[in-house]
Amino acid sequence: MDGNYGGSLDLRLPRADTVIWFDYPTLRCLRRVVWRIATTYGRVRPDPAPGCPEQVDWEFLRFVWDFNRKSRPQIVAGLRAHLAEPTALVVFRKDREGERFLADAGRTDL
Image (tube, rainbow, N blue to C red; front, top):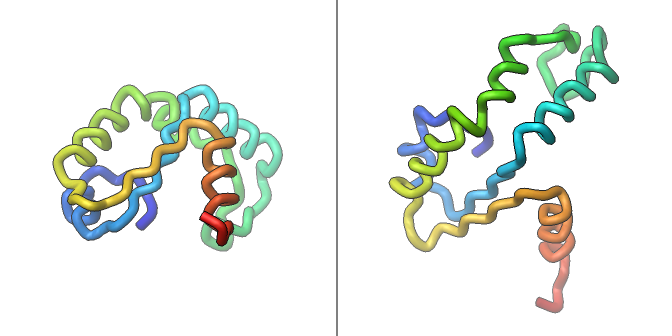
């Protein structure tokens, strides 16, 4: 599963065997969104639906700004309430941690 929609965590989390959470600081996320807008403005990126050029979306910028204050507590509560044992919870707070995880996932000597 992908996404942070909290309204269905109670349905999705009990079915997961692993949860990988990129729990990044607000400023890092906001900086990356602004960089994406600045470098792809007016063009259609390959990941969204066709015909949707990159634009400044103030509502999305506000969502990113408020995410750790408003949405993160709901995610933490959902994880505590609905994450079934023995589900693995992997939390990345830095890019380096994710890179290390991916590198280790490809190793055969573990």
